[in-house]
Amino acid sequence: MILRQLMEGDTSGINRNRRIAFTIRELSDVKDKMNFSPKEYQRFFRAVQQWQEQFMKSFFLSQIIIPEFCFRFGKHIPNRFLAEIMDGQQRGTTIVYRYLNNEFALPDDEELEFVEIPESDFTYDCRGKYFKDLPFSVREYLLDYELSAQVYLDLTPEEAGEIFVNVLNNSTSLNAQEKRQAISSPMSRFVQEKARFNSYSVFETKSNGKDLKWIANADHSKLDVDKTLAEIIFMVSSDTYKQKGVGGKAVDDFYRTHARMHQKGFKSNHLDKVMSFVNQSMRQVPNAKTFLPLKLFRNYCVMVSDLMKANVKIDPVDFMRCYIQAVVNLKDVSLRGKGMTKTPFEMFMNNSSKFDTMSALDLLWKEVSKVQYFSVQLDSKRTFTREEVETAYIKQKGICAICETEMPEFGSEIEGDHILLYKDGHPTTQDNCDAVHGSCNRRK
Image (cartoon, rainbow, N blue to C red; front, top):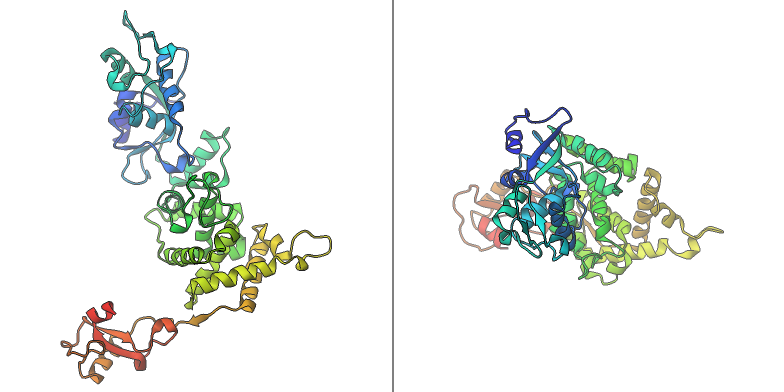
């Protein structure tokens, strides 16, 4: 059992060319410990069933050689697995998780009418057969079919990504986001989950599963949404984009940094708040969904993030309407220079350099200020100190300001409540503090 040995750290079965031979039976036996379908190494769409049927047919045709796999063992494998398939995921899942589980049958092709099995005097009709319907000898032949794999040991997430992109896919065209996501990290997996499978509501697709409902001209199949979310995370996580722009190299470096330094997890509390706000904006302003392509959507998210970081309260509908009007103003044809087909803002938006990125955002901030939106500067201090709450408790003689009943002796269950609402811009100061039951405060 070479695969199980490798998972246990025994590398004696690897030949000098870093290759191993294994059977389908062995592959099936380790399926719970091997990640057959790491999202880092696969395109968005899975192989269609017709391809899977023809692939399984090839095991019974002697003139066809099954391409070798590539496995990764050892340290740094994400999640609960001890190994993963870096190349050959669709082949592996087709064999082990679909055909052996009777998810589909072999094609009804004449080439499968007289299948010859080594060391057998008979031929077998395998047309249209599920695995469970194959004769015992044919099932055993398939389970003992020997495959080969290239093996890598103890690769870091960054090394695994580099090998996948530059070695395993050197003849296959990968787009920039596919290359980044091959560098496995919690952030990389977060981007894929949120942009594709467990999406933020604003990334919901139309019935065709390709175009987004709420953002203009966004194509899921090209990983446009993954790329945009990666850029948003990059821009709201730090100010690096102000020095490096949002070009491919800057975002690549960001992915690599996370792969090296942040393997334990990815925090998204601030991002979740930003995307929740943006989701309200997109869904409540009817023309936003047809007006904002992904790059303008990204910049809107960044501006919302900046306001949140500055503790400025804004209304999602009001700010979106203001933002749309600012974009309309900045695209006005009267702003085009002589002989130009685009305004300065449109030209800045077409590029990702530091200068263009910052120039586009600067124009947006100036224009939304001219259009005007309602905002409230919130106190940076959100919670009352225990001393302030106790002072209010003594002043109120132990009577709750909400339910007007006597509170117990001062302790952790007594909380501070704003007399004039914090969300309306009022301060977190002693003169704006009421002492209340914690239960009353949460019910309020």
